[in-house]
Image (cartoon, rainbow, N blue to C red; front, side, top):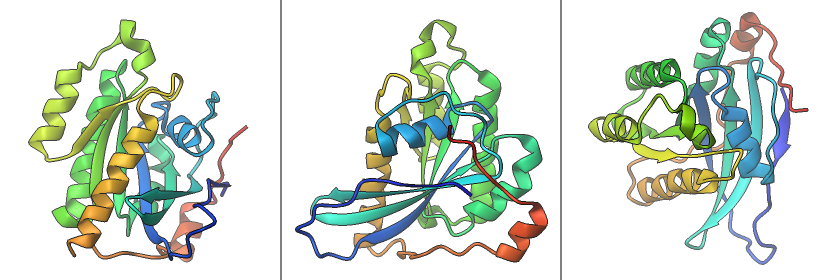
Length: 213
């Protein structure tokens, strides 16, 4: 499993970070890995499809609070579907990503939401619906209004992004971080450090790796 470390918080702080597990879910080629890479490295690469899962970490400081996001980038191919279920267990937040130029990917994101509903109670997980690839506006198949309507009807956060153009990528992750902090401070969501993965179950599902070249 590939691991990419993000930025570290300011050296002056000695505060222990709040650790949150964040999963990226969606169809293959919607840009999940590119969103993570843009957020972590502020760079864009045409990345090969993720196999199994890739793991990233990113430190953030918001309103004087230090957060560590453990970002799990799951594979979008159908054959890895069961593996993805292993990785989103114990998640604090999820980004449901679709390609605005691919209507099928929007429907797939909606199916992922139904699966999250079956796995989590409403206050257990922060979910943001992300319409990626706004750079493909001329080929758009999912309108802004469609994405916003589905998010509002299910009480999800919503944002359109472009990993390629660096449009609203950090804003999407920051919106999730703000909501995680709000819920933690209100006692609505317990902090989970070092989210566990059943390694035996993972092994039965098959080895995973990620290409980040």
